[in-house]
Length: 108
View 1 (cartoon, rainbow, N blue to C red):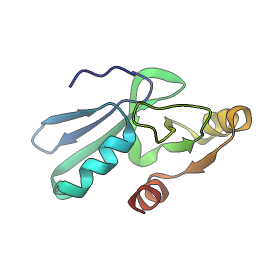
View 2: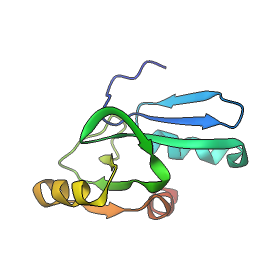
View 3: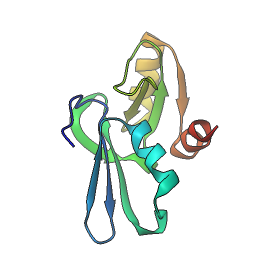
View 4: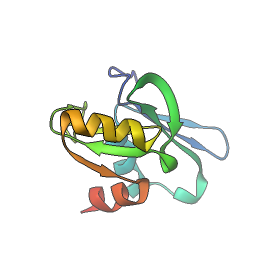
């Protein structure tokens, strides 16, 4: 898949080294519904404040803000640290999530 929006892209890396690329973190999360998660070694999302830099999604802070469009319409951005996420939230509004909170939110 060709990644168009480098700010919101995401990847899954399996334990065997196969890489699955996604236009957005929400696509990666939706993919988990049909994939054996025990085979996954890494969940990666692009860092909003440093586009094209992949970060560990399980340790990231996520912001859902309607003022930051993402390719698939979930308005979801990933941040390497909570301070950057809070700074962007103060400017753009929205709600912050941990990885676990995000999974629960998008499952609904």
